[in-house]
Image (tube, rainbow, N blue to C red; front, side, top):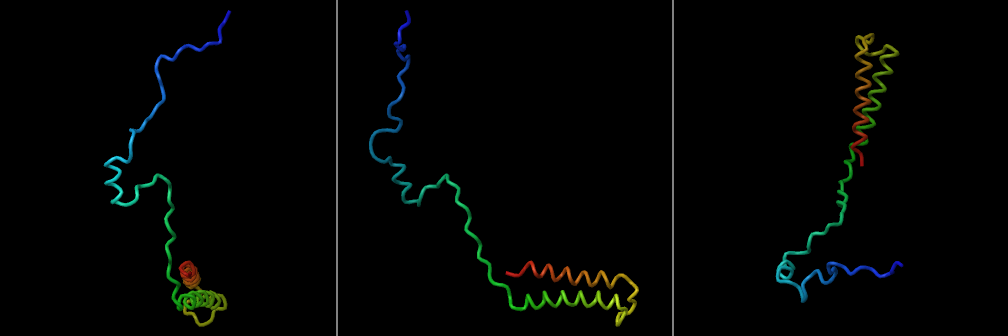
Length: 107
């Protein structure tokens, strides 16, 4: 016949882990150093950016329009020396790309 008794533990477990009493000397001394470091993640605060200068949108639009004008004048073959060359198209696209890069700096 089986019994429902558990065997006696061979080793006693449990009990106090920290010493009895108040704060230790080390914890009292560290109170003057500031708050203890936390193990929780604290995200960085967002950086505050200054507003864009007033001339940036003007330059951005001027670069867009200059690029479009160069490409238009290339296709209608007016006022551009050597307009048969594709360098005018690359220059117009370069102005438009510069306008896009200026647009990324606008806040």
